[in-house]
Image 1: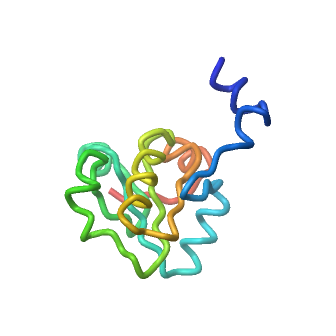
Image 2: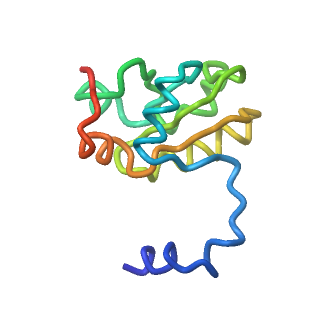
Image 3: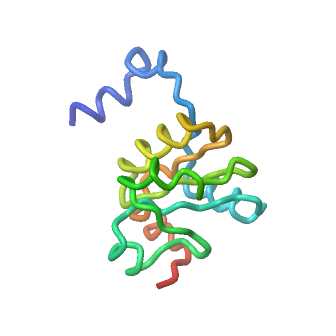
Amino acid sequence: MITEQLADNPACTSGLDEPFQRLSVAEAVSLIERGDVQVVDVRWRDDYLDGHIPGAVQIPLYEILSRKDELSLECDILLVCEVGVKSVLAAEMAASIGCERVYHLEGGMAEWLKQGCPVVD
């Protein structure tokens, strides 16, 4: 409740300078359809295997920094988690190691599924 109130209050969010862009599901679909994007699922392996965005690679949040060489510096990177919390941290990490075109899926896989978007096992 408090988090929602803070997020809805421009005075609390106007000074934020995030090194990534937040995308809705529709915006993420458009980005993926354009191509030249690396989709990185930061959930646990079992969650990833239960269903993920087609073409996504799985790098758990706790391995983002140790596996930084697997993150592309040449294309857009879309980070995804279950509800959109861990992927914010992953986006911050990706930006801190030099990734410049970093995106985060708002609402995560929960919102992706709610919108009826495809998943693969």
